[in-house]
Amino acid sequence: MNEKIGILGCGWLGLPLAKWFLRNSDEVYGTTTSSQKLATLQAEGIHPFLISLSSSGIEGGIQDFLSAIDLLVINVPPKLRGKNTESFFEKMKLLHAEIRKSSVQKIIFVSSTSVYGNLQREVTEASVPKPATESGKQLLASEDLFKQDNALHTSIVRFGGLIGPDRHPVTMLSGKRNLSNGNDPVNIIHLDDCIHLINTIIEKQYWDETFNGVYPLHPKKSEYYTVEAQKRGIPPPHYSNATAPSLGKVILSKNFLDKGHGFGTPISS
Image 1: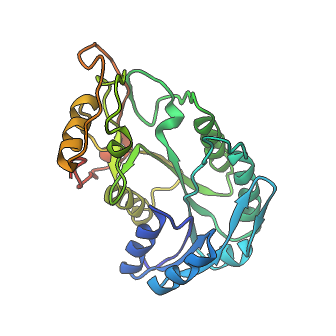
Image 2: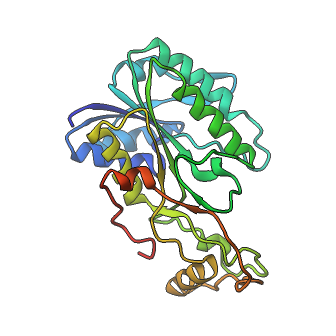
């Protein structure tokens, strides 16, 4: 591809993604909110920028960052749990205004399947989102902010639960009792497939589209997390109604699969 790619948020997903682009001979510019991490990014060959978004402003050289790149991956989690009530949507409005001042036109906005809320059926990119959480609502509003701007070519990636090195939901579920959703299907994706999906969008120029990012197998939570706990030698979670009928929400990556692409890293790996 040999593009100048900016990654806003070089964290758990952003940093490995940046390394992937570097191996493809792309020039990568990455941001962090930690001054201690600047040296880490630079050591990897990433042009580092210290940029912090808040609902009241953007700290750091945002225009210097944007002026250096051809396309932008927005990888900023909402972080609206707990006591944090800062508006994610207001952050995205400020970022959008800065992007409009720059020459950047191609954007990948990393979102979440939480925008689909509690739909109890098969869900594709054509399904109407009905977010039930504040995080999901603000993500959907932020998606629309970029998608509805005809001056930009924005593709949305809605990832399911993320797994990979040092990250798996079973570690938080281990030992918990009387969980009520054991018959529901899992909707998760491995880090390697997240990178594969984003890279494919850029490589194939799939702009102005929406992609669900979920592995195509959906075992029951009670079965899947029990096996994953046993593999790690930790207590499995206990589900009180694992045999109770449940339609559940099955999220399909229809757009990506219909284009002839697939996912290569099993969620049991």
